[in-house]
Length: 92
Image (cartoon, rainbow, N blue to C red; front, side, top):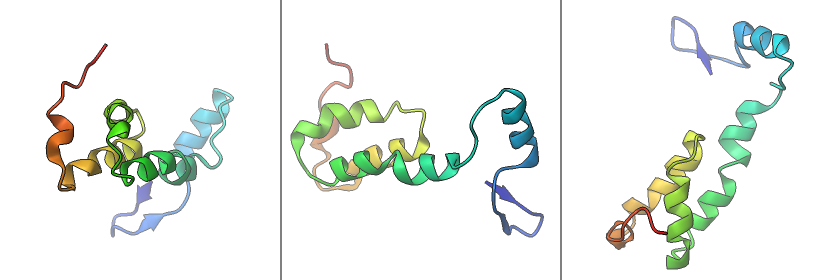
């Protein structure tokens, strides 16, 4: 996301990013929507189920490279059941 000197949002990816992606022959259309809206959706619904069986999945989501998935996974800490983090993060 880009902003001008007044703090106004500039829609679309930067021209530098588009040039880089085109040079590398990488897809860049719709990546913002995919990362912000579509990819984190399942994590959001899972986090709001209040189902303790979701805890291992939400812990894994905290390590996601997608920042929105991390945010939704971390939202469970704001709920009354803070017991989610009493358990060790890594389990084999």
